[in-house]
Length: 598
Ligand code: ASP
Image (cartoon, rainbow, N blue to C red; front, side, top):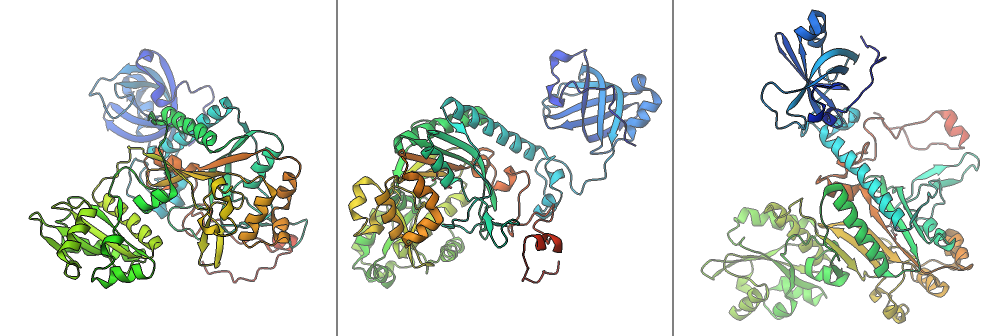
């Protein structure tokens, strides 16, 4: 039966009780983690978000009735206890922050009883994700998730502090906006008052933050919810959080400067990690050439080597065929892995095929300097020698080559070096390697749409030195865009914006928008620019991924309180769900899809 806490007031969280409180009476409240009966003594581990504290019930203090009540406590009961802080009689528990203290209980109240939870409320449980997410409110009681969400809150606080100091204003932008699809699919919200019309949920506050610059706010930031209706591959969520910012009268270096100091500040304050500044920078081209990725993990080497020149006349059709088709041949050197068993090499070949490679050519440099290889017989002794030398191959090394369209070769080898590093345990989660990627291409070719699309977004400024190629060779134009990466993850990105009509018009033209279409979608921004627009630039971080890395977790679900699963549903609440006929009627909506059987 639930008792009231009337007349009792919590004085401390469990681990806020310290040695200085010895001899004092305190009142703590929380959940029963564990109970142990030792006849005339009963021990309780009490848990709250701060951690655990041991409570002792002694029949001499609480009498038979008190002991009976204490004996009735079960896991997850919510209780209030008043008692005296004492130094522990028995062994000190090194695992508890309050390991050398305990509370001699004087009064116990059972505030609520609890059913047995479907899984234990403990660190590192081996429970199916589905069960954890269905009972997320219990999962969230576990210390790892509590630590993650406390870290997340701490980071948000530090972001606000830092941004305020730097003269940024926190301004909210709307969540019901006009649909301006470019990039991902919008989530739509039907309008009741305008039947047949829809709002979109923002994919980012991009247009609004640029408008705020036009309105003179100079420096804006926001911790903003964003929405993208994509098929959820990998570790994505349909709703996610950005730290979003925009600055006026700045260029790339200014944005980079303030963001480096922001990152250093939050890493220092929230997890005690020093970020050495300045953070290194690398152009997109160099990142692709050296790592096959625009978000290279630089915690380890295993860089790509272009060996096209060396094998261009060799007798191996796979190499020469790829080169003849305009592709390239590149390789990586897995140092010291020459003795890798054939089965494991085959697994790497399969891995590469998963990325669309037709295969992988390999060459092991044996300890005696001879080669074991899938293709050596097609190459002359000199060619082999030159190849191994170009790869910096030494006895004991494993060389892996991909030959194809360069874009695919980059992708395959970029993924392969990560896979090998992962298998070798080279990826240390407590090592933080930041890297700026700059000079991205302005456009990329979309096979799907059969046209150039903006690599970042249509408001990104081309590099001044490339402006004259906008007409003649747009695919070669680089952008004033930058990403900040951490350990092989893009944690943020942004750009300097176009603020000149003629360049913006040209941009839309190349992207295949007619003047009317551009006006229809982005007219309010283009109009605003006619009334005096400052040069501006900005950046947005994916907060979920950033916190995931700071918390050393593998999934963003571990740092989001109520995440959705792969099919964008919430296993706890059952969203999305059908709605009443009446609700649909008010929205003038008729549903065509058959409701799936549950
Ligand atoms: N709005 C961009 C994004 O969501 C970031 C930016 O350009 O500031 O990636």
